[in-house]
Image (cartoon, rainbow, N blue to C red):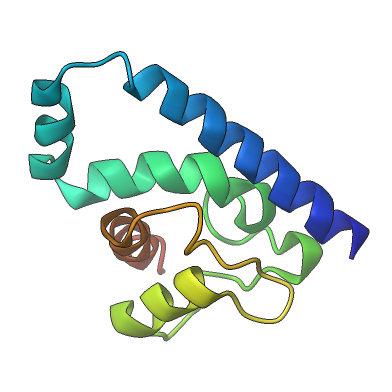
Length: 113
């Protein structure tokens, strides 16, 4: 439980810091990010929030994290797990937008062996 609390605080801090830098950008840069390829965005978001437990390649398994390389979940179910959490995994619906969650889910599909 203590690890989950620390992870949640750490993830919130990273999210808050990343948002403060984007407020100084122009409207053009925010619209460009929505037209960028989801896998590139998803990879960046994954490396920011998910690598702590799942590892760079999805197979680390820290704090009971599932091995994403062997996962058979379809993208829709991955979106649900990222949004609402599962077992020890914290929900990200308050930290990430639906588009970002979808991008991460799509990126995790590329980690499969």
